[in-house]
Image (tube, rainbow, N blue to C red; front, side, top):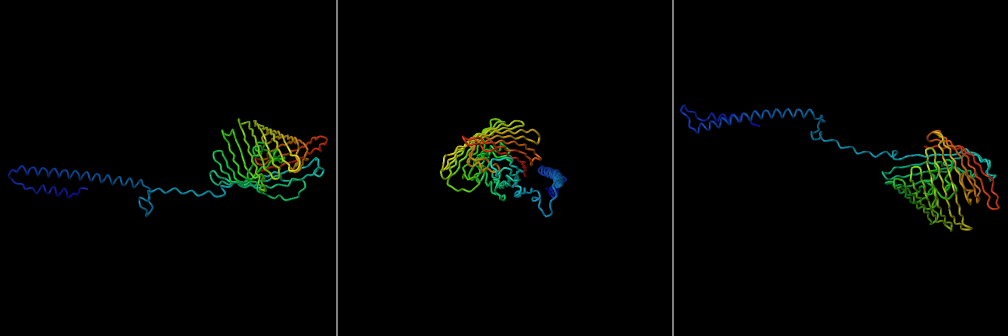
Length: 410
């Protein structure tokens, strides 16, 4: 900033030059001229400096008006600094845990049976109850713990419904692939049961006729390729189902499926189980399904070789066909027919369906599923078993079961 005293000094210096009445010398004239010019320049700079100061004050006032008010005691630099984004708190545990389940049971009556001790029995039973806990551990990790309870279903045991562990596994998923460690669904009939879709009415053939287990303890890998047109599920397990390991043998299972169109799907499956005492088993199954606009159809054939420690080996086979027709908005007609070609030595151990052992038979199922609500269904159904003669052995009397099944989910 140019001070006023500078101009005064310059002006005083100009006045200090001697002045005579006589004509001045050229040198004196030159000095006096330079001092006058310098004084004019100083005055001009002082005026410009005053104008710049006024403009600076005006700009500072405008900036102060635009700035937000500062907190008392905070410096300008602190007030202008943005607050850091808060670190998100972890989600509560209950937001990462899903609880679900379902229950189905019947009011039943044995209208006819080859066994007089079972014929005319009637009552109520719960054929299955699930309570499932699914936990999201991370973006690619999850876990499941599931409990099941049910009635004995053998028409003679009076026991409470004790729950047991049905699923207990850790799952890792990425890009349509999944690795499962623990007690989980086996490939034996997971696909078939999903396509059949009416487990409250009846089990799938391999499950119903005790040709395999729905669960096993081990390691499984499943996934899909080619935009879901190919899918697969393989597993190495104990072979003891949802029970404990009791031998050194293991069970290998694998299923390969194809879905060339949205309507058509097929799967082939095979397994081999190393059982103790020369009782190994090998199973294969082929199934195909077709889905229409208001209907669904399925075909299946399965065979199993059973080594027997004492006596001849068993070869059992079954074929099955079913159809589902959605005739109303909330109602569906379900029909199924199974044919057992050789019968089963342990057929009389099938729960809720007392079938004669070692006898070829046919099973027919007819049902109507009426949805009372999205998660509640009432299903009247009948199951009819007819037997066939084997050589000179006459077939037993037919079996007829009537049921009113209630199914609900939560």
